[in-house]
Image (tube, rainbow, N blue to C red; front, side, top):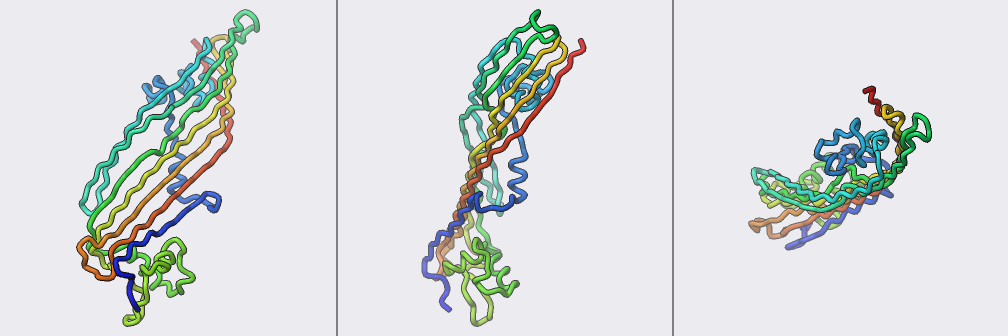
Length: 287
Protein backbone atom coordinates (compact mmCIF):
# COMPACT_ATOMS: atom_id res chain seq x y z
CA UNK A 1 0.00 0.00 0.00
CA UNK A 2 1.23 3.48 -0.79
CA UNK A 3 2.69 5.26 2.18
CA UNK A 4 1.81 8.77 3.23
CA UNK A 5 1.51 11.40 0.50
CA UNK A 6 4.68 13.07 -0.71
CA UNK A 7 5.65 16.10 1.33
CA UNK A 8 2.64 15.65 3.54
CA UNK A 9 1.89 18.45 5.94
CA UNK A 10 -1.23 17.64 7.87
CA UNK A 11 -2.82 19.46 10.74
CA UNK A 12 -4.44 17.24 13.32
CA UNK A 13 -7.01 19.18 15.29
CA UNK A 14 -8.34 18.15 18.67
CA UNK A 15 -10.89 20.48 20.23
CA UNK A 16 -11.99 19.69 23.74
CA UNK A 17 -14.94 21.55 25.28
CA UNK A 18 -15.89 21.19 28.92
CA UNK A 19 -19.51 20.71 27.91
CA UNK A 20 -18.59 17.31 26.45
CA UNK A 21 -16.40 16.15 29.34
CA UNK A 22 -17.74 13.95 32.11
CA UNK A 23 -14.70 13.97 34.39
CA UNK A 24 -11.40 15.66 35.12
CA UNK A 25 -8.00 14.04 34.87
CA UNK A 26 -5.19 14.33 37.41
CA UNK A 27 -3.76 17.44 35.72
CA UNK A 28 -7.06 19.29 36.05
CA UNK A 29 -7.48 18.25 39.69
CA UNK A 30 -4.00 19.50 40.58
CA UNK A 31 -4.31 22.74 38.59
CA UNK A 32 -7.60 23.86 40.11
CA UNK A 33 -6.81 22.77 43.67
CA UNK A 34 -3.65 24.87 43.97
CA UNK A 35 -4.64 28.24 45.48
CA UNK A 36 -2.11 31.08 45.34
CA UNK A 37 -3.75 34.16 46.79
CA UNK A 38 -2.63 37.27 44.89
CA UNK A 39 -4.05 39.98 47.07
CA UNK A 40 -2.82 43.38 48.12
CA UNK A 41 0.76 44.52 48.42
CA UNK A 42 0.63 44.11 52.22
CA UNK A 43 -0.74 40.59 51.86
CA UNK A 44 1.97 39.60 49.36
CA UNK A 45 4.68 41.27 51.48
CA UNK A 46 3.85 38.98 54.39
CA UNK A 47 3.51 35.89 52.16
CA UNK A 48 -0.22 35.74 52.82
CA UNK A 49 0.08 35.67 56.63
CA UNK A 50 -2.98 37.86 57.15
CA UNK A 51 -5.34 35.16 58.39
CA UNK A 52 -4.90 36.28 62.00
CA UNK A 53 -3.77 39.88 61.40
CA UNK A 54 -6.80 41.06 59.41
CA UNK A 55 -7.78 44.55 58.25
CA UNK A 56 -6.74 43.65 54.71
CA UNK A 57 -9.12 42.99 51.82
CA UNK A 58 -7.31 39.79 50.83
CA UNK A 59 -8.25 38.23 54.17
CA UNK A 60 -11.91 38.16 53.09
CA UNK A 61 -11.04 35.12 50.93
CA UNK A 62 -8.81 33.53 53.57
CA UNK A 63 -10.15 34.27 57.07
CA UNK A 64 -13.27 36.49 56.89
CA UNK A 65 -12.78 37.54 60.50
CA UNK A 66 -10.10 39.90 59.21
CA UNK A 67 -12.84 42.31 58.12
CA UNK A 68 -13.76 42.80 61.78
CA UNK A 69 -10.50 44.66 62.42
CA UNK A 70 -11.34 47.49 60.01
CA UNK A 71 -11.76 50.76 61.94
CA UNK A 72 -12.68 52.87 58.91
CA UNK A 73 -13.95 52.38 55.37
CA UNK A 74 -11.45 51.58 52.62
CA UNK A 75 -11.31 51.14 48.85
CA UNK A 76 -8.49 48.98 47.51
CA UNK A 77 -7.18 48.13 44.06
CA UNK A 78 -3.97 46.20 43.40
CA UNK A 79 -2.30 46.16 39.97
CA UNK A 80 0.28 43.40 39.57
CA UNK A 81 3.10 42.86 37.08
CA UNK A 82 4.01 39.18 36.84
CA UNK A 83 7.04 37.70 35.08
CA UNK A 84 7.28 33.94 34.52
CA UNK A 85 10.45 32.23 33.35
CA UNK A 86 10.36 28.64 32.10
CA UNK A 87 13.29 26.38 31.20
CA UNK A 88 12.72 23.11 29.35
CA UNK A 89 15.18 20.34 28.53
CA UNK A 90 14.35 17.70 25.93
CA UNK A 91 16.92 15.28 24.50
CA UNK A 92 19.74 17.46 25.89
CA UNK A 93 18.35 20.60 24.23
CA UNK A 94 17.55 23.42 26.67
CA UNK A 95 15.21 26.36 25.86
CA UNK A 96 14.33 29.39 28.02
CA UNK A 97 11.03 31.25 27.70
CA UNK A 98 9.75 34.30 29.57
CA UNK A 99 6.25 35.74 29.82
CA UNK A 100 5.28 39.07 31.44
CA UNK A 101 1.69 40.14 32.14
CA UNK A 102 -0.13 42.85 34.06
CA UNK A 103 -3.40 42.19 35.90
CA UNK A 104 -5.43 43.14 38.98
CA UNK A 105 -4.68 41.20 42.15
CA UNK A 106 -7.91 42.48 43.68
CA UNK A 107 -10.37 45.34 43.75
CA UNK A 108 -12.90 45.95 46.51
CA UNK A 109 -14.51 48.18 49.08
CA UNK A 110 -15.05 47.77 52.82
CA UNK A 111 -17.59 49.93 54.66
CA UNK A 112 -17.08 50.25 58.41
CA UNK A 113 -19.67 51.71 60.78
CA UNK A 114 -18.60 52.90 64.26
CA UNK A 115 -21.12 51.92 66.98
CA UNK A 116 -19.03 52.56 70.10
CA UNK A 117 -21.25 53.65 72.97
CA UNK A 118 -24.42 52.89 70.96
CA UNK A 119 -24.76 49.11 70.93
CA UNK A 120 -23.12 47.84 74.09
CA UNK A 121 -20.17 45.49 73.40
CA UNK A 122 -20.73 45.77 69.63
CA UNK A 123 -18.12 48.39 68.75
CA UNK A 124 -18.16 48.17 64.95
CA UNK A 125 -19.82 46.45 62.00
CA UNK A 126 -18.38 46.07 58.51
CA UNK A 127 -19.57 45.16 55.04
CA UNK A 128 -17.23 44.36 52.15
CA UNK A 129 -17.51 43.34 48.52
CA UNK A 130 -15.13 42.93 45.58
CA UNK A 131 -12.94 40.43 43.75
CA UNK A 132 -9.79 38.60 44.83
CA UNK A 133 -7.59 36.63 42.44
CA UNK A 134 -6.82 33.14 43.76
CA UNK A 135 -4.52 31.80 41.03
CA UNK A 136 -3.19 32.66 37.58
CA UNK A 137 -2.28 30.31 34.74
CA UNK A 138 -0.47 32.53 32.20
CA UNK A 139 2.67 30.86 30.88
CA UNK A 140 4.48 29.86 27.69
CA UNK A 141 7.04 27.14 27.02
CA UNK A 142 8.81 25.47 24.12
CA UNK A 143 10.37 22.01 23.91
CA UNK A 144 12.49 20.87 20.98
CA UNK A 145 14.96 18.12 20.17
CA UNK A 146 16.14 15.72 17.48
CA UNK A 147 14.82 12.21 18.16
CA UNK A 148 16.75 9.28 16.71
CA UNK A 149 14.67 6.61 18.44
CA UNK A 150 10.95 7.04 17.83
CA UNK A 151 8.01 9.24 16.93
CA UNK A 152 4.58 10.07 18.29
CA UNK A 153 3.35 7.70 15.59
CA UNK A 154 5.36 4.91 17.24
CA UNK A 155 3.03 5.00 20.23
CA UNK A 156 -0.05 4.87 18.02
CA UNK A 157 1.30 2.05 15.87
CA UNK A 158 2.30 -0.04 18.89
CA UNK A 159 -1.14 0.44 20.46
CA UNK A 160 -3.12 -0.62 17.39
CA UNK A 161 -0.85 -3.55 16.58
CA UNK A 162 -1.10 -4.86 20.14
CA UNK A 163 -4.86 -4.34 20.38
CA UNK A 164 -5.66 -6.06 17.09
CA UNK A 165 -8.66 -3.79 16.57
CA UNK A 166 -9.93 -2.32 13.31
CA UNK A 167 -9.44 1.40 12.45
CA UNK A 168 -13.11 2.13 13.22
CA UNK A 169 -12.41 1.24 16.87
CA UNK A 170 -9.27 3.34 17.29
CA UNK A 171 -9.07 6.40 19.50
CA UNK A 172 -10.71 9.26 17.60
CA UNK A 173 -8.22 11.76 19.07
CA UNK A 174 -5.15 9.55 18.66
CA UNK A 175 -4.47 6.68 16.27
CA UNK A 176 -7.85 7.11 14.57
CA UNK A 177 -7.08 10.72 13.71
CA UNK A 178 -3.63 9.77 12.38
CA UNK A 179 -5.16 7.01 10.26
CA UNK A 180 -7.72 9.40 8.74
CA UNK A 181 -4.90 11.54 7.29
CA UNK A 182 -2.73 8.59 6.15
CA UNK A 183 -0.08 8.93 8.84
CA UNK A 184 -0.75 5.27 9.73
CA UNK A 185 -1.00 2.76 6.91
CA UNK A 186 -1.19 -1.01 6.40
CA UNK A 187 2.17 -2.73 5.84
CA UNK A 188 0.96 -5.72 3.81
CA UNK A 189 4.43 -7.25 3.52
CA UNK A 190 4.92 -7.60 7.28
CA UNK A 191 1.19 -7.86 8.03
CA UNK A 192 1.11 -4.98 10.51
CA UNK A 193 0.17 -1.33 10.84
CA UNK A 194 3.08 1.01 10.23
CA UNK A 195 4.02 4.69 9.93
CA UNK A 196 6.76 6.66 8.26
CA UNK A 197 9.55 7.76 10.60
CA UNK A 198 8.27 5.54 13.41
CA UNK A 199 11.88 4.69 14.24
CA UNK A 200 12.96 8.30 14.66
CA UNK A 201 15.23 10.60 12.70
CA UNK A 202 12.95 13.63 13.17
CA UNK A 203 12.98 17.05 14.77
CA UNK A 204 10.28 17.24 17.44
CA UNK A 205 9.01 20.61 18.66
CA UNK A 206 6.16 21.47 21.00
CA UNK A 207 4.90 24.86 22.21
CA UNK A 208 2.38 25.21 25.03
CA UNK A 209 0.66 28.47 25.92
CA UNK A 210 -1.62 28.65 28.95
CA UNK A 211 -3.73 31.57 30.13
CA UNK A 212 -6.55 32.29 32.52
CA UNK A 213 -7.13 32.65 36.23
CA UNK A 214 -9.30 31.78 39.20
CA UNK A 215 -11.07 34.79 40.69
CA UNK A 216 -13.45 35.00 43.61
CA UNK A 217 -16.23 37.54 44.07
CA UNK A 218 -16.77 38.08 47.80
CA UNK A 219 -19.59 39.53 49.91
CA UNK A 220 -18.53 39.79 53.55
CA UNK A 221 -19.97 40.86 56.90
CA UNK A 222 -17.97 41.50 60.05
CA UNK A 223 -18.26 42.65 63.64
CA UNK A 224 -15.96 43.96 66.36
CA UNK A 225 -17.02 42.97 69.86
CA UNK A 226 -15.27 44.88 72.67
CA UNK A 227 -12.03 45.10 70.66
CA UNK A 228 -11.38 41.49 71.68
CA UNK A 229 -13.54 39.25 69.52
CA UNK A 230 -13.67 39.84 65.76
CA UNK A 231 -16.18 37.91 63.69
CA UNK A 232 -16.59 37.57 59.94
CA UNK A 233 -18.34 35.59 57.24
CA UNK A 234 -17.98 35.58 53.46
CA UNK A 235 -20.28 34.44 50.71
CA UNK A 236 -17.96 33.73 47.80
CA UNK A 237 -18.51 32.98 44.12
CA UNK A 238 -15.31 31.61 42.48
CA UNK A 239 -14.92 31.68 38.71
CA UNK A 240 -12.36 29.60 36.79
CA UNK A 241 -11.18 30.40 33.27
CA UNK A 242 -8.43 28.28 31.70
CA UNK A 243 -7.18 27.99 28.13
CA UNK A 244 -4.35 25.82 26.82
CA UNK A 245 -3.06 25.93 23.25
CA UNK A 246 -0.39 23.49 22.15
CA UNK A 247 1.30 22.77 18.84
CA UNK A 248 3.33 19.60 18.33
CA UNK A 249 5.37 19.18 15.14
CA UNK A 250 7.55 16.41 13.74
CA UNK A 251 9.81 17.42 10.81
CA UNK A 252 12.02 15.34 8.55
CA UNK A 253 14.62 18.12 8.56
CA UNK A 254 17.28 15.94 6.91
CA UNK A 255 14.99 14.79 4.06
CA UNK A 256 15.60 11.11 4.75
CA UNK A 257 12.14 9.99 3.60
CA UNK A 258 10.71 10.66 0.13
CA UNK A 259 7.13 10.11 1.32
CA UNK A 260 7.13 12.28 4.40
CA UNK A 261 7.86 15.90 5.22
CA UNK A 262 6.12 16.90 8.46
CA UNK A 263 2.91 16.93 10.44
CA UNK A 264 1.53 19.20 13.16
CA UNK A 265 -0.90 18.29 15.89
CA UNK A 266 -2.87 21.23 17.29
CA UNK A 267 -4.76 20.97 20.59
CA UNK A 268 -7.03 23.49 22.27
CA UNK A 269 -8.48 23.12 25.77
CA UNK A 270 -11.05 25.60 27.08
CA UNK A 271 -12.37 25.29 30.63
CA UNK A 272 -14.94 27.49 32.36
CA UNK A 273 -16.37 26.96 35.81
CA UNK A 274 -18.29 28.75 38.55
CA UNK A 275 -19.18 27.82 42.09
CA UNK A 276 -20.25 29.01 45.52
CA UNK A 277 -18.75 28.69 48.99
CA UNK A 278 -19.32 30.06 52.48
CA UNK A 279 -16.57 30.91 54.96
CA UNK A 280 -16.73 32.02 58.58
CA UNK A 281 -14.03 32.81 61.09
CA UNK A 282 -13.08 34.61 64.26
CA UNK A 283 -10.06 36.27 65.77
CA UNK A 284 -9.78 36.63 69.54
CA UNK A 285 -7.33 38.97 71.25
CA UNK A 286 -7.34 38.37 75.00
CA UNK A 287 -4.98 41.28 75.64
